[in-house]
Length: 284
Ligand SMILES: C[S@@+](CC[C@H](N)C(=O)[O-])C[C@H]1O[C@@H](n2cnc3c(N)ncnc32)[C@H](O)[C@@H]1O
Image (cartoon, rainbow, N blue to C red; front, top):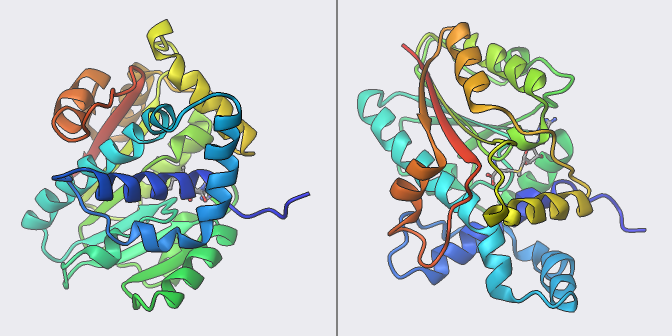
């Protein structure tokens, strides 16, 4: 039996960003650190995904079609939105929940911005070791939190988070693994963190999985095989009304808008998923 190695999906997302940053002629974001930060995972990812899929007669192009669109399009979304937020709030805090192997804090030239990275304690230990090995410096404050059991606010305050500063929050690739109630409770916790907030996240909708997008079923089967089964998807209307009920102003990017704004012209020859949605929820 292989020892537990923490989130494999987080490694896959970093691999997708590394692949994209190297292969596109004009990448819309350049995660030049992703390749370095997943160096130790090369063998794991090759064995788990590429080799196994090849044995099943699946070729690299299909693996790329499956794995790239979601992490890449949401990174374009997040990095663009953050630039806008920072223009108005140069002294912002950037809080990355379920950060995985995100490297934005170490690529950003925003000296005034403070970065806080929250992740499951086990996985965060691995990331910290890699940041140290690569000698990238103390650009982010690491805050170990399990969303299912810990108080986000308390852990952040203990780590030096400042509730009086405008805060930009991303929770990318996390809702897939939390049921709607746990996710909403995390959003309630986020509301307590600052009076001026923008929160970005992605989620998948169950009902729109069409035959044309059997890819999503494949993706879901893959994450289950990797030991990270997805929870049920959310309904877009429920997400929007619940967030508005909490007092957020909500901007919803439909699968079609994601395709137009973050895929076409950004990721060559790739199709977006028909059931992935992005949300920008703000409190001013
Ligand atoms: C699919 S990965 C996405 C990582 C990163 N946001 C990205 O887009 O590359 C999901 C992340 O959520 C974290 N996560 C999942 N469940 C969690 C929980 N209950 N508490 C804290 N973190 C959790 C995992 O450790 C992992 O880093």
